[in-house]
Length: 325
Image (cartoon, rainbow, N blue to C red; front, side, top):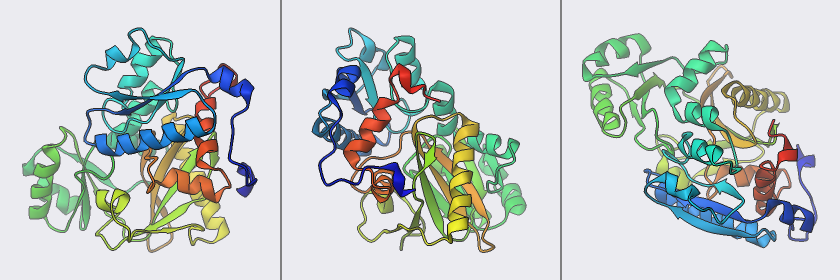
């Protein structure tokens, strides 16, 4: 996969023709979701990289009513660096689309679907793609029955949050009931799924190609919010440690998942491997983090793609000739 990028020592610069075609670019960041702080970091990193590449870009901290973002817009297109609800769930995509303003990443349906972890799993299951056994949980009273059906350990997560917010690993029906209450305080939809014991991998996707997979390991109970954004002891493996044929299988599974949900341009798919060597799809991120701890820029670097080239390539797909297929 190393032929994806440019391997020169010169800082990446967008061509004058491309800069002109892109026009004035607004980088939307911040928002009002639980991932606001991460989004601000992502947005600032994206903005800095676009400006370094010569793109006429400026930042917008989006707060409150999203409809105001398209009132007399002083920009030609939007790089969406908003994580979580409002920015990643199809809402902003619908508003921008209705206003005729091109934007990065997946369109309305794929954004809304990928943000809903439960319904994403319904699609995986319906399309014959491997995903851990799961149930939607709607009340504490279901804890005994769900635990009896799925066994231990289990993962409990709010269906619409990202960045591992609200996720808990449980080993008993009593813990499941408690974790449900914590997750339900964040979301009206709670997903319970079998916990896959084994290594975790993430595959970043860029313009219909899989970047090198990253193997993740942490001393935390799992790859949680702290491990993602704060800890310095999280271990990232590139190469990921798999045999070449297994990495190709992993990348193909990520591409299949991306396509069945209808995603476009860029994103990230999180996958577990069990002790028998089988891969299991967890979720899709349509606006992954772009901070100094983030995985998509890390995978791009491994493919010889600088951060500047990465963000310009994502943005370039908003041009009509890109096709967005």
